[in-house]
Image (cartoon, rainbow, N blue to C red; front, side, top):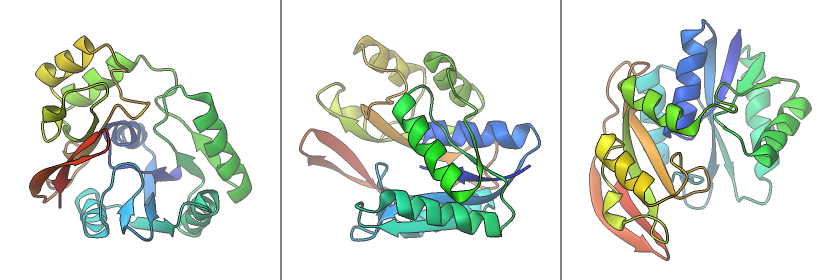
Length: 213
């Protein structure tokens, strides 16, 4: 089956993409919703140059969907329709168990005429984190909600040590509620490591964000 991946550049969407490819399905695009004013993807804050580097490293075309946020759902549906033109029969999402997120994604797919797939749905959260690490993915912790986690985790990789710290803080191990965000910079489905540079640690409100470009 040909599919489009709703891609955040983070660990969960990368693991979902890995599972789809491993079971013989073919990705025709990476659908990324971006803030047209900031020039970065929503939530994970990946700029457009780096998004293009993802497309090159994964060898999957980028389907960039810029929006001001007010018409986020329309931008998503537009991206899905562009994926259909590339042969997509389904759209894949990295959601785990937040029902309203799944419902939203299914509505977008219904409107576009695609089947919605959720390879991680109801998987054990700790098992997901262990799997993405054990598979060899390099997940850089890009941002931290400092209400829940220490700021100095930003810029580190998700590994046994950082998972231990996250666990001891008593938060969702996957960070599904925005406790932390990652970007994946290498792993089995990458044809080459993602070129990137880290910069300063920024503090914006309750978030600690490592510059990555």
